[in-house]
Amino acid sequence: MKKWIVVCMAVFLMLVAGACQKSVAAQVAEQLELGQQYLLEQEYEQAVVAFQKAIELETNTKEAYYGLGQSYEGLAGISGEDQKEEQTAYFAQAEEAYLQVLQMDALDSDACTRLIAVYENTGELEKLAALGSYYHGETADAELLRRIEEAGTCLGVVQQIAELCEAGNVEEVFTLLQSGDYQKLKELSSRLQSPVFLVRNGVGIGLYRVNTERYGVNQFVYYGGFADSLRQGHGLWFGYDNGNNYYASGEWSGDLPNGEQEVREWGSLLDETNFTRVIEQGVVVNGLWNGPARWIYEEKDGTAYDYPVSFTNGKWNILNVYQHEGRTVYSVHESMDIENPDEIVGILGFLDNDSDRSEEILETLPEDIGTVSTEEENTGEDAQESWEYTLDELTQMVVDYRERHGLYRTQYVRVDHEDGEMVTFQCYDVITDEETGDSHTATSDWYTISRYTAAGYDLNFDDVDLTE
Image 1 (cartoon, rainbow, N blue to C red):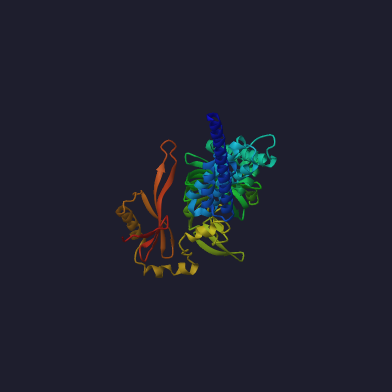
Image 2 (cartoon, one colour):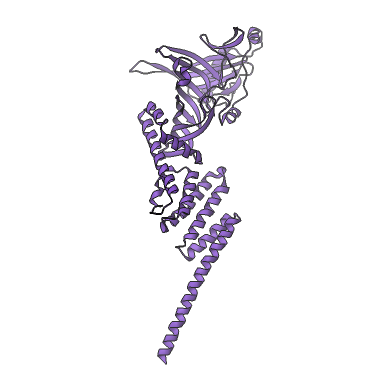
């Protein structure tokens, strides 16, 4: 009798265990179905909860991890660029979920496809290139493997650019920009949502789309400092198209060229004008030249012409206007003329009114104060009688203003140029190299001030009142 009871109890326990197992499987299936429904309705937060419950019930549920990755991708998509940190966190959670799928099944092409999409959204080229260590096998999808291999090739190009920039081999960078592998990088970067690669200790590389009259729709390369994915600090800016080379070296802030810049341009565009190279040196604000600059033209025979010129908000400061062979010519130096006084001049990709960002940049600048016409210049003496301040008085007021506000006291303050009632002052030092004896100027600030009110703006276009 006892033996019979033991047998019955064993059978009962087996039935109970089987019922519990079916119950777990049924619950998992229910949560998977619920999660899929939430995905269809784009209720991504509820979908996350459903798929996580399925994983809690059965940790090796591949479908639950895949659905969880889709849910986090959906949340990243609706968070938008204005919630960058949140979006980045969601993409990282999606990545983790898809990698769990591949750890369970290294041939899951759906998870691999979604991971490629995640890395293209985040611009994580290194992770995309390393995806082959997770997705592999004899029956792996050939197209997916090709895309992973392509990412590896592109990563190699990025690393080469970094090495050449670090070594100062600018000419070799332009040789690389003409290679077939770089064309692959351009094609890949056009699909990436983030243009920035390989940031190490605040220094990295990015490819940026520009649309300029001279170089067409193109992608320029930036190598230099970054802060929160924005270009910041010293940077190099490369552009190449059909034999034309453009290179800028200088300071950046707020993702724009700001500060001292030197630009060098050479190639077939200059061949048409019989010059081998144009060198531009000066200060830019939001990508546009401001204050004094040097325009240096080098001819094919080695002869160089150095023209000191100046700008206001990216526009040439005109010294004289005259007629020549039936057309109006504008002089910006005693030996240098231009034909279009309204041309916006600055770092390529941030000027010419045809950059993707030119309208945005120009909106940040104060309204143009215009150039003085010949008639206005002829009546300048009459206007001076009503001006409140002389140039000497304003120069001293600039010095006193900087001292009152605890600003660095420069060696010199001088009048750079006059434009009607507005006068632009340069505050600068002369720095001499003790070893070579060479000297250069180091500008601390510019002030554009009204002779009537002694008010105006500084280098950053912040309001300034010299009487305060």
